[in-house]
Amino acid sequence: MVSRFAPSPTGRLHLGHGWSAILAHDLAAAAGGRFLLRIEDIDGARSRAEHVAGIGEDLRWLGLDWEGPVFQSQRLALYDAALGRLRAMGLVYRCFCTRAEIAASLSAPHGPQPAYPGTCRRLSAEEAEARAAAPHCWRLDMAAALARAGGDLIWHDAAAGPVRADPAPQGDIVIARKDAPASYHLAATVDDAEQGVTDVVRGVDLFEATHVHRLLQALLDLPTPRYHHHRLILDATGQRLAKRRGSPSLADLRAAGADGATLAEGLRAGRLPTSFSWPNS
Figure 1 (spheres, rainbow, N blue to C red):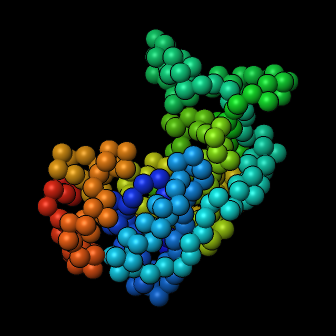
Figure 2: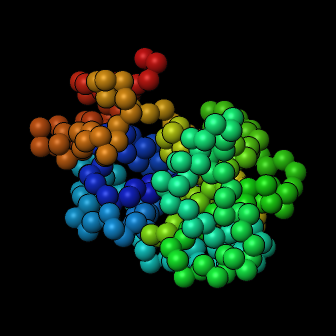
Figure 3: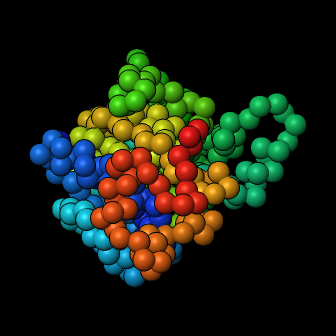
């Protein structure tokens, strides 16, 4: 079996990242498999070399070893090829809407609205081509994609068991961003298949994303790995850890005198440092 840890180098790893890495590492180790490190640096504007180095420091501090890393920024041709296949099938369209325009549209009093109202899906091919030089992203035509995939799309979660994929509520999701050649959905799905990942370990906050990934696997004829969505670690206020909220990093814990190997063993045993908690505990 092959598992992976795939952080973005946009900040230092926090305890939740460490927990996810430990679970993925131990799952592979128990099966005599491989544990891969993938650096999801496709967001060039926010990715930093010093954070790549920090990821290695933190994983070594926890006592983990791995194969790699592989960098998404060096795999752009794979994502472009996948986007090309979706374009050839007529399943994606250019979207020129700004965030402000989308927000204004969704706030209009027209009853329940999907994540994106499909404004640019209604452009003719000629109109879209005429505006092609303007900034745009590529969106998946969800209704067309589901019709193309056909039938029930099932994926297996270690805790939930067989799950029938239902990505429709997420609407016409972004497949390639204005500022990046692929979205998280497309890049992660393509990478997991290309790297031979058999088991995806990640937080339960990404459970809904798996519905989309299962659809993309069907459309692109990619294998479906097993999924292990683990519980999250919360801070003292009961909120999940996040870089953007300034959650304490593993480097902060290390600077405060914590021992990485002891911390890792504590997590494996269900023990958390002071000021952190498991949900519903």
